[in-house]
Length: 229
Image (cartoon, rainbow, N blue to C red):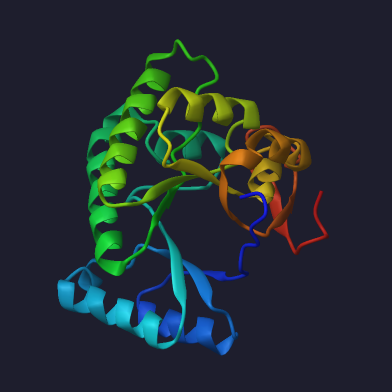
């Protein structure tokens, strides 16, 4: 992203994406990241309604944020068990879900699929690591056919681990959504040093701040920008 200035936007979610887009417009912003809307918005007619509303309000939806049923961010052990694609028991179905999100985004003319994939194992010989690499290769290849990039959220592992993972997936349409607060929330890394490692992969940023957890196994706490660690 060297030499390019990213526009400032917001993340939208909720039961009605049209209401959310209206809020974006009311803030005078022209861009947003959108969480996958509820199933009742998945018909071609309703997808077109979202796309047309964004177009009329001159709002670009830069990425579609994936989520999965059963995810919980209660504490670190729960996150490791329930979030993203790490758990073999849910990985297969969730990969298929991401492929369907890619098709949804294609209809919406959104060019980035974004997700927390879970804690990437540091041991590259771990079977879970190898299977996670293959899962992301499948997702990236599918998204490439839809002219999309895959953006991985930062923070649940050290920057060097994520960088090595991206190298092993070895797909040109894969990057990161750089979230400095996540690195503090999970006590995973120094955000400034991490940016030096991951900068060449950055295709999106979350402007957030946080303080590191006080006890092992817990999450830190989010704070307004400039008030965290």
